[in-house]
Length: 318
Ligand SMILES: NC(=O)c1ccc[n+]([C@@H]2O[C@H](COP(=O)([O-])OP(=O)(O)OC[C@H]3O[C@@H](n4cnc5c(N)ncnc54)[C@H](OP(=O)(O)O)[C@@H]3O)[C@@H](O)[C@H]2O)c1
Image (tube, rainbow, N blue to C red; front, side, top):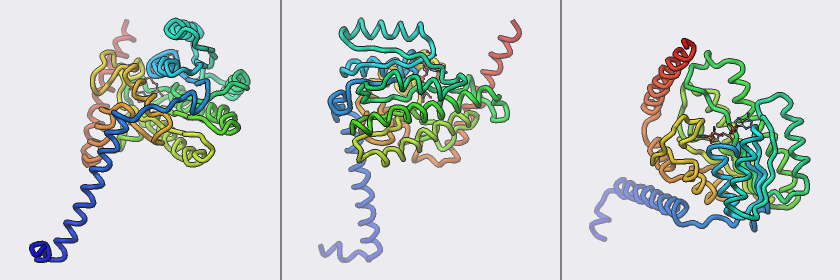
């Protein structure tokens, strides 16, 4: 005690601030460890309702999420653009979970007339106890490119799928949830917008995913006290066709591994990276100075652009 009082006041103040910062960091770490490894998933059917609507359910993350949601006892409305792929997923879900209720609905979110097709989907699910909506269908770049190289069609598809479809689908499904006073909306955003300080050469993609982030964050506050949990999940790389990654790894998991983690997070934090190595990357990127991250990502994107252009040139040559 005598030793402590011998310290000058500024040193004592500094020690107190240090203690506060360290205990805040320790609390955050403990909460994250609990959420990532120990916290039970919400009982989705009981808590939110009997059905889940999943967009882009024919491949990658959406397809894997559909199986996880069926495993959680939810009926499925699978939404996609390919009737054949929808039928195949539906058949596979029914085979793996006998008794599971599965419906399909065909929409091409990039096509004209989106308002009418989403209205038709809303009509087809009228009266269903839709507890969970997953806005997963998304559009990416074929490969990295400067903004002035992004043509009209690519810009339009990115905005239609990543912004307009998410907004329309949520607007179609929310009223039923409000009426029933329960529901969960999961928007699949991206680390490109919510984790990275910038994503050069994927600018329109990242900007549309920033929409999903802020759209979800505000809706979370708007509907929390109406019993509806809105969330933006922000994956980093997942080994899917969109990411052009064939081989899963620790930091680019298979869609199945990602989906297992994703379902455990539904209904909790409004913005989250459910797969723990992605959360670790989030932390690392948050402590590295932004200009360093910017430079690293620009270098990576330029490399991808170079390879993409070479591949395109080879295709044109044959
Ligand atoms: N993979 C990653 O590294 C990563 C990282 C961050 C965020 N995300 C996000 O995760 C979500 C899922 O991506 P993913 O990697 O699983 O991609 P994916 O494997 O390419 O699957 C995309 C799904 O969306 C569907 N889809 C594409 N265009 C469509 C359209 N015009 N109309 C209706 N459905 C359409 C696809 O249908 P088809 O089967 O007919 O092609 C497929 O079911 C996206 O929102 C993406 O931005 C992915």
